[in-house]
Length: 594
Image (tube, rainbow, N blue to C red; front, top):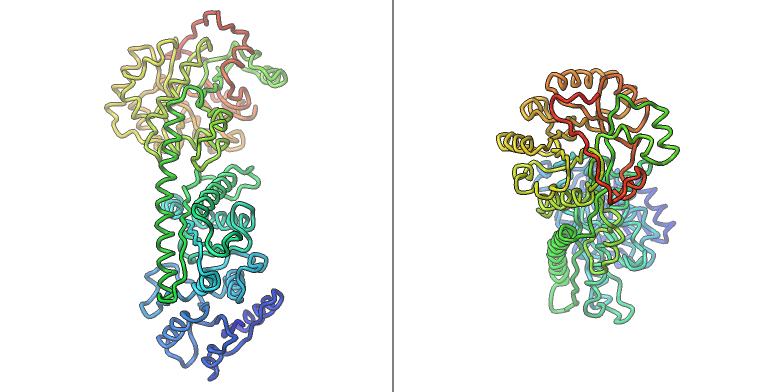
């Protein structure tokens, strides 16, 4: 039976009714009732839910009572408000880990956790729980005593803490909610978390979840050697893939904020404990929880190592990374009819005479990656988009090597494509372009796009690299202008051949007078610098028409051409591998490209 002692009569009434509906017996009593303590020690009472303060009773007395009571039965303390910061918690407010603390506004959590206290936690717990309940030690202690042994899994999602630092508390809370829902949905899924297992949140502030395994069907207690590790690995992969699936959900269904581009690594640790009547059961449980936590941290380290090995494999392989190419066009002589014709034919051929060149975009050969059964990196190959690749590369400290591999693939497959080959490059690789340019010996005209989303920490080296490129008939473009570290002052100093306006500046520019005014000013400044403007990410003719009227010279986007393999582009343009590609004029400072 659950004893409920709260001044919030509406909450108590609703809780009694909902617990009764779930077959859980409960009884209400006032904290100030002289019989309260007597009732707490009644043999039928398995749990106590009570306010953290009682009229006429010193706060310290409440702490002592509930902390002591928590070593015998499950105790849930209800606070009037949530402490947002640890600094708000006085030393005299501290309950021990034997007490679960929630606030009165967390009704679903109170109900789930109360159902958790019903005396038979492994029987239909999920069906009784609207959300994942909170941890209380009495439940695993009961399981440990009943089964003689207990398997403990700890989910460590501490990597989510960085989201709070990078994007703020609102984004962090949304990500925590998505993780909660993913885990709740996996509860009861075969190969993940059995419905008879106990899943709970460690606390309201931590990114840690606990799973207490129901007895093994084979052994009646702990599973056979190695079984817990296999469960932990399966669960890790299931959670990681479910979170990636949430990240790549259709925009209308996506719950993860757009600013989040990758999923922090999650780890699941495991440990088994045996009951020993000669040792305090709380000590056995605490030791098991700590060992499982340490194992989760070790698995996080192992997960990072596997991701590093994945990136190294992709970088070294000749067939796992491949280049696709998106055309860049001279805008001023393109009309809407030509664009429609290209769309109807699903071919770039009608736009052939307007081609300036092609930007190389890296892709993962997903079929080839999937065919390597030895890959175990915690992320499905279908989620390895370019932004994810570079996020993983940065996380595993191989960003420069991945960038070099992308350049190599871009040059290798671009043979015979007309015009200028535009290749993305990190600033730190551009500093050493004299050592990397050998990859492009077979490319007549090449332009390197330096992302404005990464800091340029050595402007002097950047200027030397620009001069080196100029001597070797290679160009430089400032990519992603309008976001990240971009600034007009840097553009003036670097004097790139091309400035690429970021998609954010171009999207719906036909409907936004402020964007139009801003872009017009930049176009004027670019003409003074003898620099060409390229608008990327153009998706509608209305956007293109406004850009054309502004005098922007180059255009790129889905309106005109989606990225394709080089072979498909050559077929559409009628280029045969035996032919020699016609030289295309590279856009250099001062050229008239209109």
